[in-house]
Amino acid sequence: MIEIAGGQWHGWIAAFLYPLLRVLGLILAEPLLGNRSVPITAKLGLALLIAVLVAPLLPPLPSADPASAVGALIAAQQLLIGLAMGFSIRVALGAAQMAGQLAGLQMGLAFAQFFDPHSGAHGAVLDRFLGLFAVLIFFAIDGHHVVLAALVDSFRALPIAAAPVDALGLRVLVEWAGTIFTAGLLIALPVVATLLVANVALGIVMRAAPPLNLFTVGFPVTLIVGLLALYLAAPYLGPALADLFEQATLALGRVLEALSPGP
Image (cartoon, rainbow, N blue to C red; front, side, top):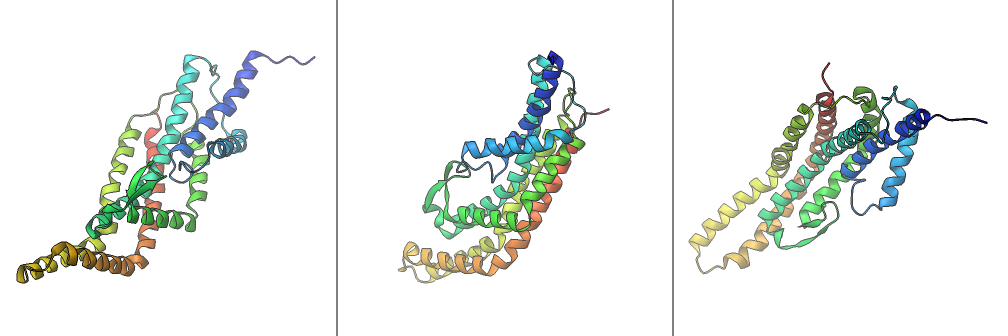
């Protein structure tokens, strides 16, 4: 009769549970798989599959009981690491959506609101359009493969251990999150600048001809000018978003490096 010691059971459970939590954190925070429109069963099934494939490649794990306080601390750290990795990628998509919000606000499309499954809230039409465009660019540059490769590499760069992660990694993550505002403004800048010129021209026309109704004339003009500017800027949006996603993968590496506990 084969007898299995309690320590062996703990080792087998830990070898599967800890990587599963890191994968789940990444999937929950990652902008595509973390979308609310993706069924929970699909997310859990994918996380289980990746964890099963990754578990044999892991370095030796700590011998702590998963049900102990140390085991709970390790499990929480793995979930935190996964969430940080997913959020690093989500920042790039957030910048594209913010660019859509800025451009749509200047075009007068802020009146058209609808439910956005990415954020679980109501967003503007142009916000949704640029978000979908960014998703297509992400798949076109094989961003999903890069994220999966980074996930596997993270177990070597930041092994599963009882040592607490460095809080500097969270600071690096917050600094990278500030890119949402700068990158979003830069992406929307051609449309916003064009609409600014159009609004100044409309102001001069209204000043010269007061009987003209600003809302009747201005809204169609800003809408047409904004759509034309967006059409002319579209060929440059793809490379800009691709570069933004590349910066996101580099930021992911910096976050992992900063989270690594010191010697």
